[in-house]
Length: 187
Image 1 (cartoon, rainbow, N blue to C red):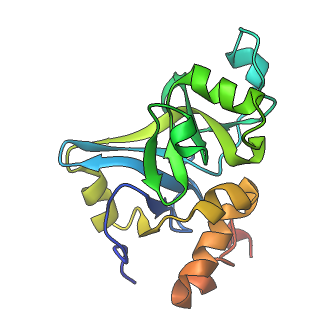
Image 2 (image 1 turned 30 degrees about the vertical axis):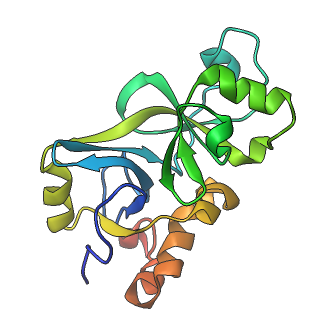
């Protein structure tokens, strides 16, 4: 089984293999938001965190969304993915119809003016980061499976179901692994 089915690039999904036992990344799907020779930055798409948006944003705001765990690095930073494109100045297109960040006031204005649905927005505390060559080494060691990103999976799938959906979408032996038990020793 090859772990480099798709290139390592901005917009790719990093999928944790079912046997990965790292509590930070077990059954995770990470969207790579940046990738270069100097390192990589991504957000875990399917890890819940028990933090309310009101605990993070003290100023009046228009958000009611839940917050997800973006990764174990700098848990005091807030990131967001959205489908609002150019209406949020400063945002970066990560893959087709998925944008990362931008000006926070522009995001609030977009939502206040009803030009966008909050279902097209996700918040993340922290991020996943890799230094130069680290991600490639982890992939080569079998720590990640690389596949193409998909906005329908970022926003259209319940996060708790995302890992399994991505594995099934990849097909073949990956689809079979989607049913691999969480605790194989218990079967």
